[in-house]
Image 1 (cartoon, rainbow, N blue to C red):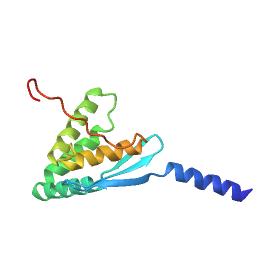
Image 2 (cartoon, one colour):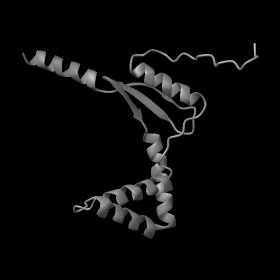
Image 3 (cartoon, rainbow, N blue to C red):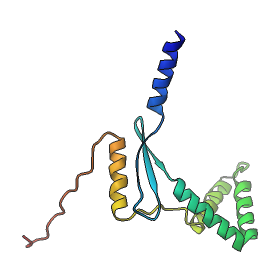
Image 4 (cartoon, rainbow, N blue to C red):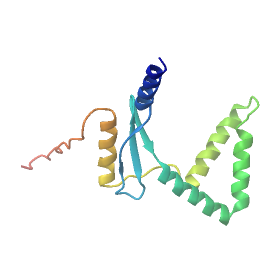
Length: 140
């Protein structure tokens, strides 16, 4: 009976654990994609690595400002019946993320198609098919 339970457990792990499909390495930031039941996981460890480096550089330049901002964000994270505090905290976090360039993950050229292909294959939709663009009037 224990062997049967162990087999079910390992079968469960195999379905839940992300299965790495591949990565898009042609751009400035590496992106890996894994499939999970019902969706996909974007591995952004390289992006976060670069973000932490940016934060460290900002901290060296102005440690007081970084410390004050993080302390203020923490203080606003536990508002006592003050909805404005939560809104202000979100605004500070947005500004902080913009300062360290952690707002957008930019994909370029072939990297866009590769990430799209990996995401579609994670969902079982197959591969990406390029559609021809519409011709302008008079062009033949």
